[in-house]
Image (cartoon, rainbow, N blue to C red):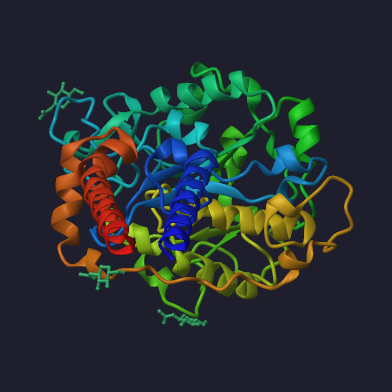
Length: 432
Ligand SMILES: *[C@@H]1O[C@H](CO)[C@@H](O)[C@H](O)[C@H]1NC(C)=O
Ligand SMILES: *[C@@H]1O[C@H](CO)[C@@H](O)[C@H](O)[C@H]1NC(C)=O
Ligand SMILES: *[C@@H]1O[C@H](CO)[C@@H](O)[C@H](O)[C@H]1NC(C)=O
C-alpha cells in the first residue's frame, strides 16, 4: 500500500516536472500564461493588460506575420497592413521645441520600432510650423509649441532607413495634411531621401481596378505609397488624394459603435467599388492606453466583420489603431493576420496560406468562418482609465515593457509566481 502511494507520488511529481519543463522550453502561443518575454513565441510579449492581479500574465502578440513573405505575386490591394494611428504621437515624447507637450499620445514606441514590429501604415498629421513642417497634434489647423512633437523630416528619415535596410518591404504614409506652404511636402520628402522609393500616382488605379503587384512595386523599388487629405496636391505635387483610392469608415468614438460601419464624411461609401483599397479606423476620440487593451481585442474583430459587410464583402487593407501592441492576446496584429488570410488565400489566417494554393483550399480547422471573439477576462481596467493613462504617459516612453509590464506587470508576474508556488507546496503536502 505504502509502496503504491509512493509510486503514484513519484509519477505525479514526474508529470508535474515534465509539464513544467515542456511549458518552459517550448514557445507559448498567444493568450497562454507566461513567465517572461522569452517564453512566448517570437512576435509576442509576456504581459498583462487588465491590471487585475488574479489574471496571470499571458503572451500578447505585438507583430503581425508578413503576408508578402508568405505569398507574393498578388496586387497591393490583396494584402492588409497594420496601421498606427498618429504614429508620431509617442508616449513620453517631449516636444522638440522644448515646451511641455499638452497633446494626447497614441502609440508606445518610435516609428522605427513600429516598423520593426511590422507596422506598414503610418498616419501622420503634418503642419506648417517654425518655417518647416512638423508633426503636431493640434486644432484648427494650427500647430503650437505645446502641441508640436518634432519636425516631420525626422520621422521620414526613419522610414527611409527602414526601406533602405529592408528591400522587400512596402510602407504607406497617410498624411492628415494642414500644410499650405507651396511644395512643402515635396521638399521634405526629397530631403529625407524618400524620393527614390516614391510610388507614382500614375500607377495607382483610380477606377477600382487592381493595383500593381507587390512584386512589381518591389522590383521597381517603388515601395513608398503616400496619400494626402488635400485633393489639390495630387495635381500640384503628385501626392495621391487619399479618398480617390481608398474608402474609409468613420474614425473616433462614433466609428466604434457595435454593428455599424459608416463611411467617414470625406470618403465615398464604404461599398464603393471604384476605390480598390479599404481602410478601417478603430480608435476612440481620445486615445486611452488602458481601454485600448479591450478595444484592440474582441471588438476589433467584431468591427472588422461588420466593416467587411459594409464594404461590399471586402476585408480592410489598412487596420488603424491606437497602441497597436495592447490587447488581451492577439490584438491588432492577429486581426491583420486574419484579414490577410482572407485576402491572400481565403482562409482565416495568413499562416494557412501557401504559394500557388487554390483560393479557399484551407486546412479544415481554418475553413470555418470568423473566429469567435473572446471576451476580456476582467473589466476592472476602466475605472481610473484617464488618470492611469496620463500617469503612464508621463512615466516613460520606452514602449510596452517599461511603461506597463515592468511596473505593474512585473509585480503581477511576481505575485502570480508566488501564488502558484504556494499552491504547489500545499499540493505536495496534501499528497504526502
Ligand atoms: C517655441 O519654440 C521655438 C523653438 O522651436 C522657440 O524658439 C520659441 O521661443 C518657443 N516659443 C515659446 C512661446 O515658448
Ligand atoms: C456586438 O455585435 C455582435 C453582433 O453583431 C454581437 O455578437 C456582440 O455581442 C455585440 N457586442 C456588444 C458588446 O454589444
Ligand atoms: C480579476 O480576475 C478574476 C479571475 O478572472 C475575477 O474572478 C475577478 O472578478 C477579477 N477582479 C476584478 C476586480 O475584476
